[in-house]
Length: 425
Ligand code: HMG
Image (cartoon, rainbow, N blue to C red; front, top):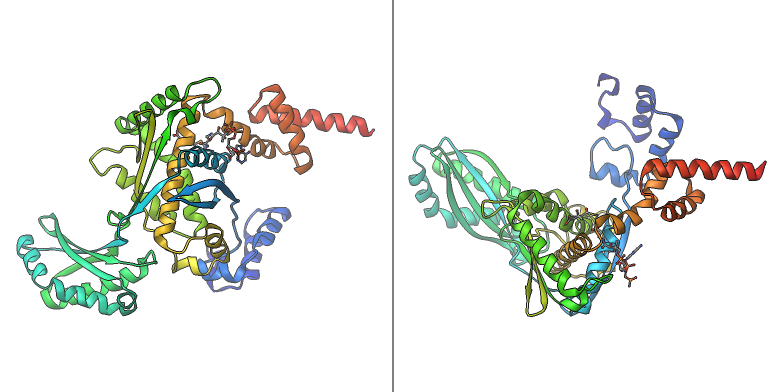
């Protein structure tokens, strides 16, 4: 470590030189680091010890009809078949009239955790008495939020243990995700609390369990729209509702079911410059809100229609944080043609539902490997060492041979190179 000194104080060129000196990287690898560093100023602004930019592909999913408005949806993901599946799911739902999406208020919860409490009942009574004063202190710590129509909404206490109490404050964050604002407000309240009640505060921080900032999407698909490759729509609809039941019953299946939903959710959260770790952790806690981890979505068969529903906490922002400084985020907001955080929530929850439909449809009909692996072949072929010119030929040969594994890709590539060499000599 001492070879690097105070890395964060050094200019970018010096950081790269230190890596060259200290690590066993090849010239080519160093060149990769250097050429990928496309936006050094932004990188240095956003994170610490910046060396390069790590880029993910961005694609567009089509066919999204949400609350009677058409959307094209930018998605950022490293996984093949996610964007195709998203368009596929959305196109079926569009034929059925589209998604109906709605959101709750955008309230975030901040927590002030009080420790070493001698009498928890007595403390909660005292806190309730000075509640209004505490909310005023919070609002005064961030007056611009109040001016924009947001600010504190309520305060509640919960006893966590014989010596621990949490004070939960709900804050309307308007168009922002609000983490920094909330933390500033909470710290001001914590200080006041220590002054007024002489109580020790363990910590003050927002909660990423955003139960008061929830989005919901539903759709109603006539079963005939689900017919696929000789299997009747009714049969597929029955199997999808059965798959949904399994995800309610079994956590092993529920996690994978929800992973499929998050394939879409995370990709739009990333494209919109939001914090996907916050969304992920909140979504999974929500999936376990009744004491058992379950699928976040449900699919039920009713009157020859498959009815899908997805609800999850979506505390995303439309302004603030990294949203304002990553140029691509503004481009993506304009591609989406959204004007508010609530509209973004509606899009994201709909993408989650479409993504889930496409995955379940594949799983209960031809199986996931056929469609997914067809689209993953290109990555496999590149991993086998093919260059851009060789790529398509190897993919075609693998499709012809019905092969989908790395070893076969390497073997086919070797044969092609041998053939080309012989043809050239
Ligand atoms: P298909 O029915 O063979 O494809 O599905 P198609 O050729 O009939 O096309 C249907 C539509 O899909 C197209 O309609 C496109 O919108 C889209 P069109 O616009 O042509 O009228 N589409 C594409 N878009 C862009 N590029 C492409 C492309 N191909 C089709 N190349 C498909 C093929 C892959 C869509 C289907 O098999 C599918 O949706 N599979 C699910 C794939 C998936 O979920 N992948 C995520 C990785 S697996 C996973 O992580 C989740 C999982 O574990 C979750 C769970 O267990 O619940 C499965």
